[in-house]
Length: 112
Length: 114
Image 1 (spheres, rainbow over the protein chains, first blue to last red):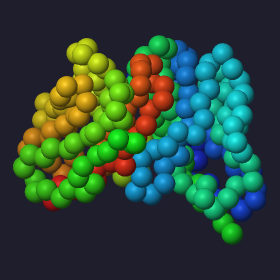
Image 2 (tube, rainbow over the protein chains, first blue to last red):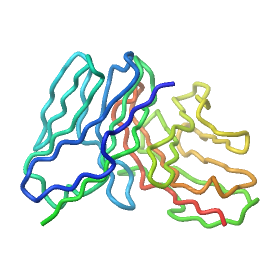
Image 3 (tube, chains in turn purple, orange):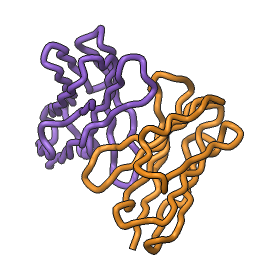
């Protein structure tokens, strides 16, 4: 079956540095990808998404890169802040489907 | 309401008892999803409702799990004869349309089976 997984379970960065969270997916039919942020005790919150016909998309302080050749997705957070500390999940949708498949998550810790 | 509301926020139950978890989606959202999040794990799809269509139950782990959505709005996830491995956070999400776009999640119900 399809799977979406993350390379690193925990990432520690210094405040002000850039963070890069990586994700691998296995289904070449995936056509839509999303990054979510989950703070303790809360539900996942949408950060940014990208369709498979794009390779880069930028938001406020965040950039998502998609490499379909190697089935790899990354989330870049610029000037990481303490408020960015959370678990980050990538998710994908299999071509035209209605539900998302989520990865295990990466814990981002921002050190002061 | 302004967001997806789930109740209760925490539930402790004895093994073998039945539990009901409630989800109030965002008003007007036609799609509703249930996911389960076990400790340190990703989100596992359980069931999906879209309008008046038959629900996609492909993620329900056993026949002890069932869900319904009344009037296209509120949804209840029922777990019968709970077991310890059912302990997890149960998350509900809703969206305005199909395609997996624009999920808004609730804060979840943390279920502990003792």
